[in-house]
Length: 243
Ligand SMILES: C[S@@+](CC[C@H](N)C(=O)[O-])C[C@H]1O[C@@H](n2cnc3c(N)ncnc32)[C@H](O)[C@@H]1O
Image 1 (cartoon, rainbow, N blue to C red):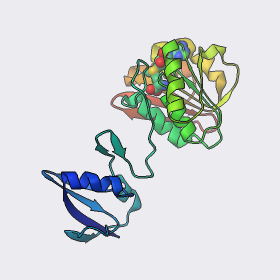
Image 2 (image 1 turned 120 degrees about the vertical axis):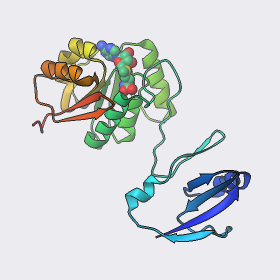
Image 3 (image 1 turned 135 degrees about the horizontal axis):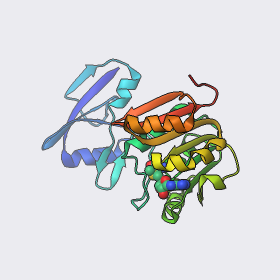
Image 4 (image 1 turned 180 degrees about the vertical axis):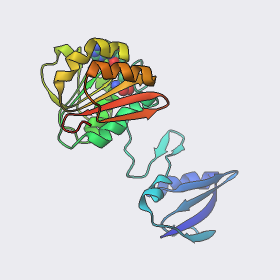
């Protein structure tokens, strides 16, 4: 595979980006912009053409979102999620949310149902839908969160049932239950969450080994997997596959 290196002034580059239908890799931004494409650009003459490895995954990772004013240019394999700034927790910046997203990516199968306990902005419920879930219900005790969950789901063009409720009020079972809460809340509601898990439970918001140990006592079952980021833990319980 070949990589084509070009240089343009800032103004010409931004104009080019709006017209160019594929991703570009920005290499250097000074007064001018040095960038690469993976197809030759008819209208431009490359500074250099390089032979590169065709390791597809690495090749894809090189494409970062490019912001031009209020546009964000993304390669087609990136999936945008719109979250309106608000009061509810869940922008994707916090490790506890990110660990849940990784777990959903790994465990959620197309057509499965999902209950998101403590939905906040609705981010995990929305991503579950984008990952192919069938029915998704997001519950929260905060009125504001329920409103934001609805707004954000609509913004992303997906339907999520956003309800003001606690886990004990939910009567159905779901294939996946994801709960990004806190140990103090798990102490109160884990017993109500547990019966709603059909196949996989994802529990996040556990800080340091101390919370993890306490959660293990509360669960009273071996974990299938534990994810960690910056001392935050996320526990997976796959009902068909525990160690
Ligand atoms: C840490 S935020 C998680 C937000 C979002 N799911 C995320 O992962 O980014 C926890 C949410 O749980 C809600 N919450 C707290 N106690 C709850 C309970 N007993 N039942 C349902 N939701 C609860 C809070 O209002 C808050 O919105």
